[in-house]
Length: 209
Image (cartoon, rainbow, N blue to C red; front, top):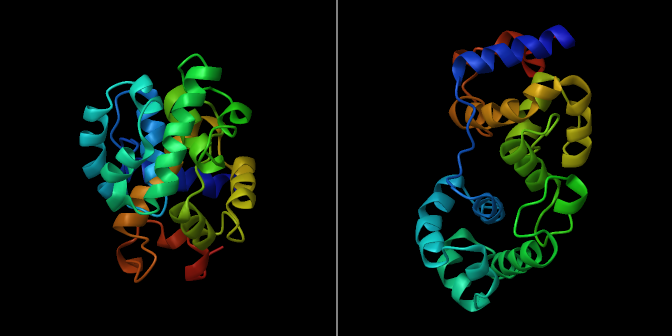
């Protein structure tokens, strides 16, 4: 399995040399907000919404002091906007009140923030702090790693723990960003482009070990 994992990693590196988060941000809390907005929404849609949102609320304090109804109007098109707006304002208040105005660098602290689950926490840890073994287990990751035979099941936390055991810690975060790009380009949920896939010879779903 170790040899297969390393080969997949190298293939993905060749396809996507720049393993960058698709969400646009400049400040640590902006990434936290963008990730919250991305739940049940595309990154492309979030990137259309956040420029005006961040311009009108240019600081963490501005978000903490914001009227939730006003935030709702900016993020309406992202879906589930009422809960997302409530979480954003609540999380920003907590960052100021309990974390010195900085997104914390531990899983335990991040999970205390409103609207932050393990997927979001892992992304923040990997992208903001380069924490090893940060596995962002989203729908792309679950689908593709299952097809490749790297994981079993569809429960995010269980798949995350399986991947933590086999991915090199220093590669985990970038691997997950590349998997998202691969899932959008080639290994799509519906009608994956198997004939054009550079990983087809490693794919369990295609009958390979």
